[in-house]
Image 1 (cartoon, helix red, strand yellow):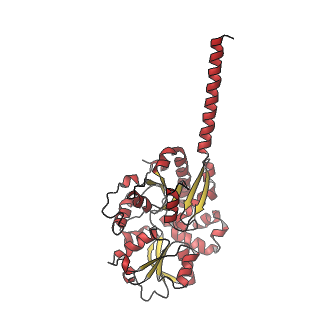
Image 2: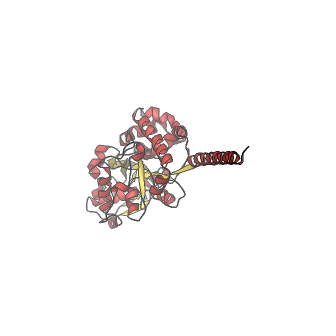
Image 3: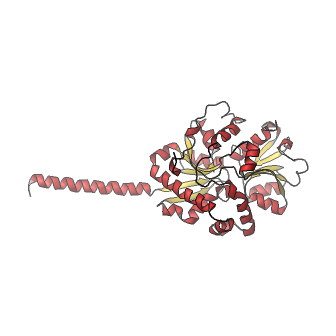
Length: 337
């Protein structure tokens, strides 16, 4: 074997080894676990998170996804900023609020074209609280201070000229802790979602004051569609993990299509039993929630402007600031630029 041929062979072997190592690294990088923090995983507004897992769509995309839960979206947001998780299932409005704080975060899939939130008034307080115009001096429950429920609560009260200093906002979480706060009289009214809404109605402990589960109800309350539950990530992660971001988006879009082509009963059948201890109640709550979901995961055209309007009305970190809405979301990964 001539020296030149031996050298060429060594180069070929070395190149092949490098290619093999590069391929293995690519597979490893693509196979990295993606941890998603959900702002209350049993809330029906965030149904697509667990449903996507239950349907096996993450695995179909070759993704290793772990779902975690925090009771309030603001806590989930903090986990994302700390780098503890790669994505959050929470409200889109956090991306606008964070931009004012120098954080570049964007929604890459939109689940809810409306908040799915309902302001409930306790039956005890219903005689004196007929609308948000009557909340002066009252205690209003929110999931957490700085959460989307607190943003919306302030906006709805502000529409009636009531400042946030004229009532008390009490963080009471969601689900069982929210129900307990109503039953114990710690809050007069509060903002929550399904299935808590249906549970409170069934028990007779609370009534609907403002309903933002449908497009019609949301337009009446907020003046337009209000994109809410979404999957958001740090922009730098989306830029450096485009393949994973696209696979995540594809898995969720398949779920949105599943939701729009199946009945509440069929969807409920796919969910874990511990999510629906009272199955008829869960199905009923799900039926009331289905109108909130997008069919394709894309941002509604008028959505970002409505959210900015709501936040600008009272949020000091957003009010009067220039917000580049185009940087707060992208339809790139759901198939439309």
